Length: 325
Image (cartoon, rainbow, N blue to C red; front, side, top):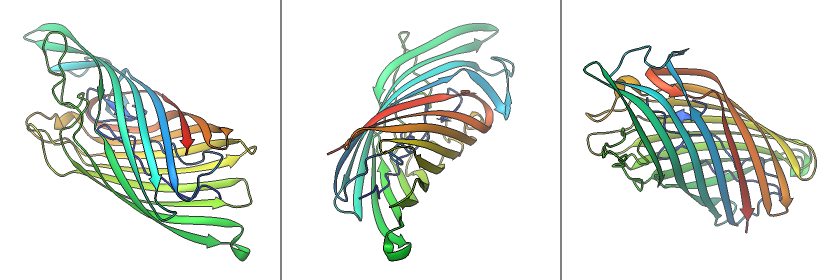
């Protein structure tokens, strides 16, 4: 059986769902916006457990104003963002009860290094944060319907489905640096909010052929605020295809679009949060065994617009491994 289910995870969680990733605000905390389940060779059973471990590297060292690149401090502010380096690990477990119903649990771990310049009465102070923390865990359920096309239902298997879930406030919101200064709320590993996740997907997989493709949309909206902070709503759209080269190797290509609303609250920076981004993500996957696959992507922005001044990246990289049990 070919792969017939899709886990719509927005590898923004707490920063899910994801410079060349989706920065939540001016400081540049980010996760990549990719579907790393689609296109893995080897296929999945109609029911069972699949584990996925993914690493992301995102170096956000380019301040941007609107759609234009600017220099550090070129647009004066209370603090000038310099750089944020995100090294993220995302561990997920996907369980299909049967070909129609399933659930995915995703836990992000972020190692984040951030530098900005604090402007105070004409003086400039360099502030730094470095931490490795659990982020906000995401639970995402799905209901899938199988559609068949082609002569005698043998040429192509299509599926359509919906996703409903929650992002839980498991990440800390009070991380401080060595001087006891708390990190900006958007830099923190968690938002402190419980977010509703609603999505839909469509996948077309040939039973005899070399091409498959998918489309996936996910909307994320906080249901509350925490400590006078509410992150902006987020909408993610992923479109992708896979080209089979051999029985064990596939070339992958995705287009990933993200809309982020402005953050709200007294501890938010609404003028420097939110925006729109579109990324092109080429990659490849290999089946090491019938149940173990590895993959890699490079993600490049092709359009970026941010509100105010925010850190962005010129590229990001993703690598991972998936296990079917």
